[in-house]
Amino acid sequence: MRIECQHRDEHSCRFVLSGALPSFANSVRRAMAAEVPKLAIDSVGIYDNTSGLYDEMLAHRLGLVPLRTEEGTYVPIRECTCEGQGCDRCTVSYTLSVEGPGMVWSRDLIPNDPEAAPASGDIPIVKLEKGQKVVIEARAILSTGKEHAKWQPTTVCGYKNYPRVSIDAHCDGCGACVDACPRRVLHLVGRKVEVDGERLEDCSLCRLCDKACLATGIGENSAILVGSEPDRFIFTVESDGAIPAPEILRQSISIIRARGEELSRALSEIAEG
Amino acid sequence: MAASYKCARCKQRVEIDVNVRCPFCGHRILFKERGAGIKELKAQ
Image (cartoon, rainbow over the protein chains, first blue to last red):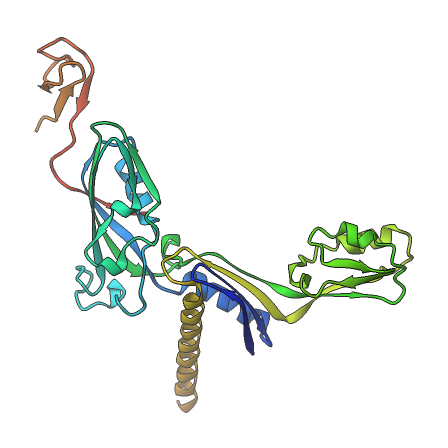
């Protein structure tokens, strides 16, 4: 099994996973979306709210603000020694106190731990008119996307099979397929159609080229063969800013490994009787 | 305990006994005041 990284920065990551089963590719995707823990606001104490939004709506909007999460800094509240009371090891507190007129931004959330500040300060929460006021205390905890989507560290997280496009020898080079392809994967070289190696990964397997070729009256079989490699996957992962995208991948792999080790230990215990 | 209201016109504090009417200015639109406690909510 191999992972080739094609692009990576803090916000997004694109890589090719090869030599893996579709079930493994899917488990990587699911682990990235639903198993990697991150911080999100879970409970909100509202002291004052004279804004146009209901308290519940305001609390919901605060819950969706991505908060920077450093791995290992906090523990899930269920595993904490405070037994769900909320302490410095499992909970981050935020205060928000803004008076109108003006917009309340996510940067107005003041954390007790500066490392756990909102990933972006430019998220609008509520607009206040003159004399309106919002005074809130919020508590964030660590959890996973399995519990609620606000704990999902990824925004985009998906994969597709690696495309395989080949041109058959009976191609007459009419160029109908080149015009039909919306992703411009094919191009004409003289009187010959060729696959553009750099753009092959953009192919969405729509088969419009295949249909265009058959429509020219070439015969029973199209001159273009469009398929995909069953054991090679192109992944695209985008982070909401809480955890860098390559870090999400790294953490998801260690989660899968830990799960595998746990399963193998359980199985060997059963085998030993 | 009777809830506290505020008159929409004269902004005086009003308590409703029989009629929904401000005893100071006679206005009939009253706003319910927010309670003094902290409202605890789940953010979801």
